Length: 187
Image 1 (cartoon, rainbow, N blue to C red):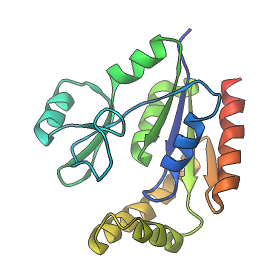
Image 2: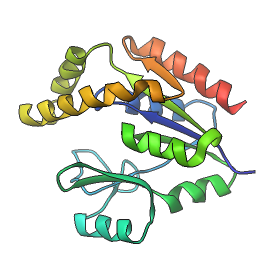
Image 3: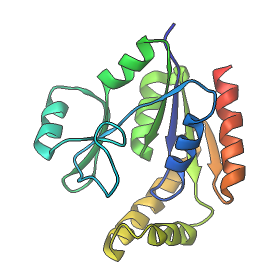
Image 4: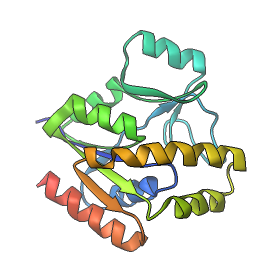
């Protein structure tokens, strides 16, 4: 039997990665789908663990070859995507797949897999709180933060297209809610 898919999407800084990492440590037998990207690795990120880091040329070649389940040029020259081969490799072994993807990508995966996938939107309590979280990361310039906030404001409008919305105001509560949602879907 093929594994199920659990998709976590959110604007950058809303907490989806923290929630996904927490869920991977629980007893849900989840396997992380490592996304591909053409952006440079951030400090501490590892190829094959955090992302599959590809050059822009390599990424575009995989697009031409229809190797992605979903992909998006998030910023000029910066692509993110989910390789079909990675997802099917995990599913065919009977294991469940968990995704940490952007909003458009999450909706594309849900549309492709329908009821075999659960799409969860992680929402920040406010745009201002999201801005604070991005600043506290200290990984990007104010210009990049402003770009992410502008994108987040658009992404928040898609929340109602997901199966479940979790508002991440207090992380411990959001983690418990995510556990409950995932448990319910997998049983």
